[in-house]
Each structure stands twice: as C-alpha cells, then as structure tokens.
Image (cartoon, rainbow, N blue to C red):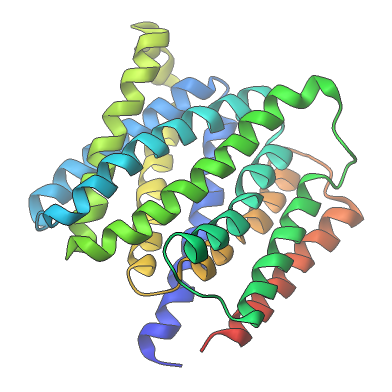
Length: 285
C-alpha cells in the first residue's frame, strides 16, 4: 500500500475519533442550542484565518460549496433536534449508521464510481453493525418517533453532503481553500438560524460553557478537514464507511460519560463494525 494509500484510512479514522468526541461535548452541554452555536462560532472564526492563508477554490467548485452549505446546515439543525429529544447512545448511531449505504448508492448511480464485491460487502457489514448499535435495546416506541425521524434525516443529509464535498473538493484545486470556505459559509448560516430562535438569550447561555464549546468547534473543523482531504484522494463510499467507526467511540462515550448501558448486543454490533472495516480494507486495491 502506498504512503498516500496508508494516510487516507489513518486520516479518516482519526477524524472518526474527533467527530465522536465533539458530538459528545455538544451533547454534554445542557442547552444543546447554545452548544451548537458555540461550536459553529468557533469554526467560523477559524475559517476566517484559513481563508486568508489558502487559495480561492476554482469556479467549478462553488456550486458544490453552496449546495453543501445548505445541506450541512439542515443536517446540523436535525442533529440538534435529535440530541434535544433522544439519548446520545441511540441518536448518534442512527444518524451516522444510515449514511454509508446511501453514499455507496449515490457514488455508484450518480458519480459512476463502481464498488468491488469486497468493498460493497464491507459497507453492508459496517452499516448492519451500526444499525445494530442503534437498536440494541429493542425497537423504539411511538414516543421516540420525532427523535428517530430527526436522526434518520441527519443520516440522509450526511450522505448528501458527503457526495457533494467529495465531488466539490476534486474540482476546487485546493483542499485547504475548499474546507476554509465551506466552514466560513456554513457557520454563519447555522448561527443565523439559532439566533432567530433564541435572540440575545443565546449570549447569556454561552458564558458557562465557553471552553467546551470552543474545543468542540476546533475538533469539528479538524475532523471534517481530514475527511475532505481524504475524499480528494480516495473512494467516497469507502471513506464514508470508515468514518462511521466513530460510532464505536461514541458507544464508549455513552457508557463512560453518560452512564448509558452498553450491553452484550451493543458490543456485538461494535465488533460487527470492526469486522466490516477489516473486510473493507482487505478489499481495497
């Protein structure tokens, strides 16, 4: 395996850990809207610096950037809603677990990127493991439907912006410039949505959780920056599946931090995810 070939899965797995951690930080803040606002404010500030030191993306990348901004804003709003209504250990797996197969389908049917039989098997196994993690404690009741709908909607949006950014960064001519402008456009969009709902009370709520929110923002930007870099060099469906290993980390966070019961079924599902990764990696050319 080449140096670049080895670096891509390492970057994606690192991003998966960072993604699970920043989501855990966001969920731990009692006022979820405040937490997400702080995270977006932080990576908007970071993006201003990155825009100044990176080249402007090529004109062909801008339709992807603008579309991804809309989709990612909707995704964050839905994830915020899911975290307001449901448990971290259940909402995160559903949101992340529904994306890989959708990305695989879109990458084959829309982008014309074929998957080998081994790669497809790996994607399927990982997705089954993630869904098993989500439903390890039984089928949710009717009262949980709003939270589940928000989480599943988040997964659909994740699939959408994964394909958009995976295509857009290849037209941009600059990974750093693409990431910088993506966060610079997305951050204020979500902040505007949150401000419209909360107004000046948002500022009051930020005071006690500022360090946690800032850390979450830095981790969020770093995680997705690594993913976009990987997308500029690797297969979208493979990268999307590897990203979802963040659910294994999230399961540990849910157990250790939020005191949610892991249980035998969740452990089995977690090892199913790891097995899927092994299949996926062995199948890579």
